[in-house]
Image (tube, rainbow, N blue to C red; front, side, top):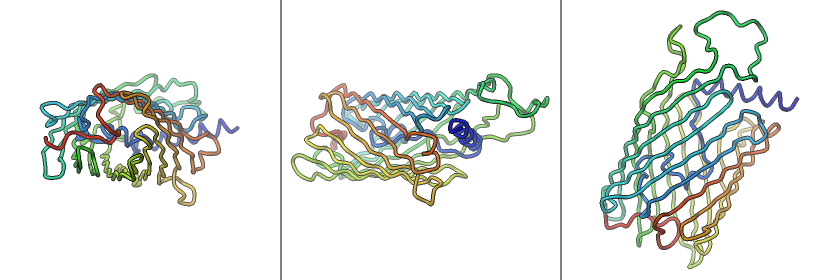
Length: 323
């Protein structure tokens, strides 16, 4: 019975997806800024490869799952950043695969730099209407507007962003960024019969954060991510974290939204380690606050980040200020 209600909740979410739904979310957004803003490309002084795996609402059949592979590097004396994301996201009978290319040009300022980013992308939408979990309660009418079988569609898009980094002694002290990753509101219907009923909608992401060195052994960070999708509520992720001895990381995030007495969507705990000079690894667990907590066991996410030329100091070390 619990599983049946879980599937019911899931397909209600899938139905809302075609109207106005936030894109895939990441608890560890602070380690994946390129996934939200193309102007963040090349912001580290080292080329960097990032891999993310997210399993949302563990135990709920067909719940969202996301895999991301991201690469970013500075070129031309840190004046230009290049990068890209390959993202696979699935929920219910729907799967999307996105390839995004990011270009950022950095303008040196007195106490930091301003990056302006451009992001062309292409995305494949796929739905399997033969999925055995779809059980018709009445005979299906003959209607060309109702998809049948496996359906696929490939759509291009383009986005833009801006990212300002205030630096001190070669390290990022605070930052602020805003981006619209997809500006074209493509038709995502799989049938041209009956007019357009489903479109991509405008998404806006805004983020800010401050890093404060407490002493020689620890650095405190406070960060905020705001996500807005047209016709959907504003979402916010608020994170506080601490890095000890430039090696051990711990954090706590509160995500707004949800459906239960305005309590929010989740409280998330994060633990990470700078395992080697090149490799940083972090795990997080989301404790759900919505009604889905009765049919799911929270959400898990893992991030691995590899620096090809490890910077000296903490993971917050940014591009050199003398651009």
